Amino acid sequence: MNKNKKTLIASGLISIGITATQNIFALEKSKNDQPNFIIIFVDDMGYGDLGIYGNPNINTPNLDRMANEGQKWTNFYVAASVSTPSRAGLLTGRLPIRSGMCSSKRRVLFPDSNGGLPQSEITIAKALKTKGYHTSAIGKWHLGHKSSYLPINHGFDSYFGIPYSNDMDKIDKTNYFQIAEEEHYQSYNVPLMQDMKIIERPADQRTITKRYTEETIKKIKEYKNKPFFIYLAHSLPHIPLFRSGDFKGISKAGIYGDVVEEIDWSVGEILKTLKDEGIEKNTMVIFTSDNGPWQTYKTHGGSSGLLRGSKGGTFEGGMRVPCIMWWPGKIKNKVVKELGTTMDLFPTFCHLTSIGLPDDRIYDGYDISPIIFGMDKTVRDVVFFYRGTEVYAIRKGKYKAHFITQAEYGEESKAKHVHDIPLLFNLDVDPSEKYDISKEHPEVITDMKRILTKHNATVVPVENQLEKL
Image (cartoon, rainbow, N blue to C red):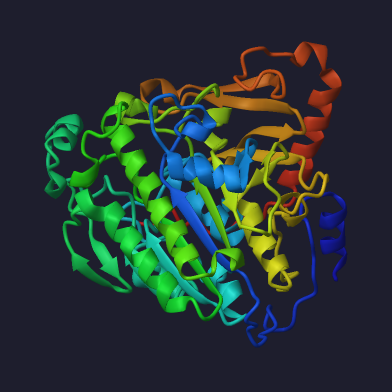
């Protein structure tokens, strides 16, 4: 192990460093007892959108039961508060600044983008393939729609979904709310893809959640005799909101509630399939969201609950998300209050499958299996809050310091406030970030500045993928 790697481990900037072979991962024969993994990654669902997280009007019985049988995480974060960098962070275990998958100019990839997740990055799927896993990506990708960036070229055996956000390729100037209420899905000329080919355009988004669910169930049945990884990334409840006929008007919370309740139904069908196939005790299922709710869209956006802020920003509501983990008979049933992030899933899966992380790169994720399996242990105590290519805030333990603040969207979002004395909040007693206590704790501010300086020293400039046109 090189000296630089040892320094990074000692500083707490990476969690583990297992010496790799020249081929990065040792290719070993798969074992029948290897666990299956399913990640259900929804789009723009807020911290306060599920019954188990306190929503009074949206019925989510399947997710509530999943949490009651498994774990509800209350301090779980994403790598970014918008789609593309958040997804890059989850699949690689690395902050998107390290792969060029974030930008302060173009915050996500668009249909005119020529960039995407570089081939040099190792995804969860690529890693698990070295252990003989079947891998499938279903739903929203948003890590590059050019052929070299699609899931098939990033370790997935199959792909079925929309390659970017479901509100892109808009060809109708009609007001969004009218389009949604009239269910005019043709207003968005987004493609539905199977592997590398477009099979439907525009995608009929009224049935998209059902079709993603059917594809997931199909893959579970197809893969059940070998270990598998399914990455189900729902296109919804990102606007435009669409739901199938069976779920139209069923929720007290309007069309947004209808959409979330259909996703809850989808989760129920997936868990039922695992039980019917007799593989639930060998399958870990994780449900979470890519960022907070898009509150610009009012009642068509979700809720951050008691958290301040929403999608696009670095207050808690933009990056703290619901997370439920389920693995019958394997993980301890509890409410988890320790810190965790989507970037932790990569090293955790690698640990559970005896895959060594390569030592040629920095990982920002941690193996959180000690927490998952019930040990009273703090694995991570620092979370970085990036907006584009800059760190805006840092959480360490119960404290969170904001070096820069900026509104989420709209004209007011152009105003960027750099704080000479960072704002400081104690999230244990003030999760809504209302009461600045920076004057009372100068020593904490000093420590946060030290952490930021040390972190910035690990960031090496790479080609920006989001700005390639």
